[in-house]
Length: 485
Image 1: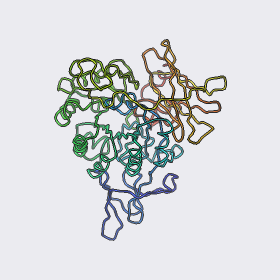
Image 2: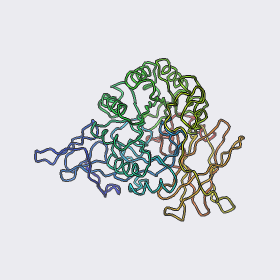
Image 3: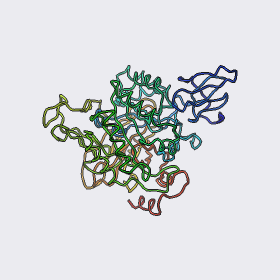
Image 4: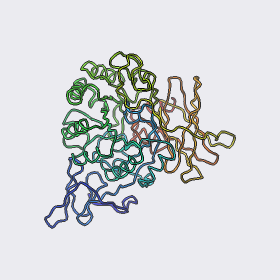
């Protein structure tokens, strides 16, 4: 594919790593970042659309280029055993080494569909400074798969770790060993999406060529000292049969053991796979029960707003250790020394009591405060709140969130600032009907509906997020039901 340097985000290039030149006089190169090993002629880009050959050398065109940085929670990344409830700074690149026809973020992963106006430009220093300004102590590389953002991820992660900031890599992990080894040197947490245990699934639906490299690299991380969790999106009529689930469970127990957390995650129709419905919640419960029967100690259900499906219990005595609903988590049964409150055995959760700085200045209430509301509905039970503070710079921008409904809960305080202008808020209980957000006078508040926790919204209109690439409704009643709540 020829380069389109007329696109604004392709004006700047950065030297790429993990490639080799062809010494045949053609200036052709091979990208060695993913098992695709794209052979790229001079003047062209690889399958990802963001790594290209300029005069016989490979460059990346997405260094520092991202969707809007967002404050989220670590549970967003299918990571339940590392600082439950911790705030994270999530960043998502443009482009992808895969081309899943069910992609939840196709508007940014598939660059031919990318709206250049949503691309943001960050430096490693700006990201680390934003963490310091807001008190967030985890950076997550997420949304579009970060594999093709390798150079920026590595540079920023090294700088972050030098400042005591934890790094998290959320990926489908279609990547080569040398790049994995480099990541192991600067990433603390790996949350890996194993899309299927079927070779044909990868070839037919993801644009990948082989399954085995993914499995090999998951094991490579497992044998390191890095924190690992594995998830699988259960896609309607694609990998939701008990035979498919059994293959995943047995591979996990045989190759990763019984203590690596496994997440089965609900899917929403997207991109080219629209003529279907969301994952049947019952098959998720079946998947969890099957995992337990083969000996997996920790299996969770994601993208489901219901009590009990994502709680952590002690595998020794059954004592409730962490309770979760949506993206909200609370450690309730682990003592200050990290031991189970029931039997006293050491917990498998790393740093169960998040100690990140939480002090904020909530003095934004009053008649002049900027205020916006959002009602939860059948499709969107989470939302991104974006705040443009007219003061700008690295000034801390406090945001208050009030949860609406019959259950009274305290106001939640957040701090934005610097390059960080978005936060995620999700439904926190069965009776909750929506949220009210308030920020400093003069601020502009914009609310974006989030369809699922891995989804990065690009529009404030739920209908746009629902209808997908073909601009057709998934079902006759989906949008009407979403509007009605």
